[in-house]
Length: 108
Image (cartoon, rainbow, N blue to C red; front, side, top):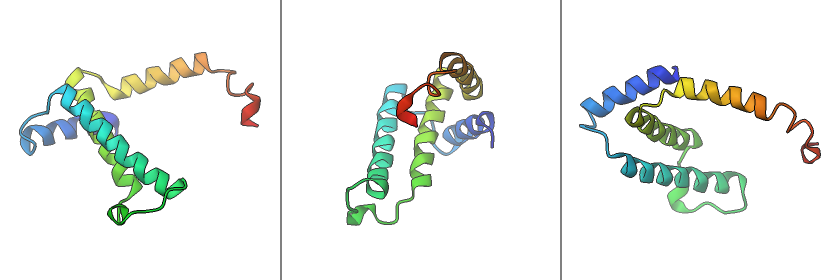
């Protein structure tokens, strides 16, 4: 699935099953909640924190998909084409960071 298709599919789902989009600020808050849930699971899987009963059964992919879902909603609401935005971001990074990481001694 491409970002373009994902944006269209989310839009269709929101307008049929979800009734309507939450406003942009509400979705921004939801995005922060979803990132927090992903963070919680990451620190339990890869950090030093131990699992709690409420963490059992949660999957990283599902938490990442929740973050992506809300980001797709926000892109739709604000008129951002994520495919174009990501392509431009790659261009920016390729110019700005062409030698930055190669010359970073901390990475070796």
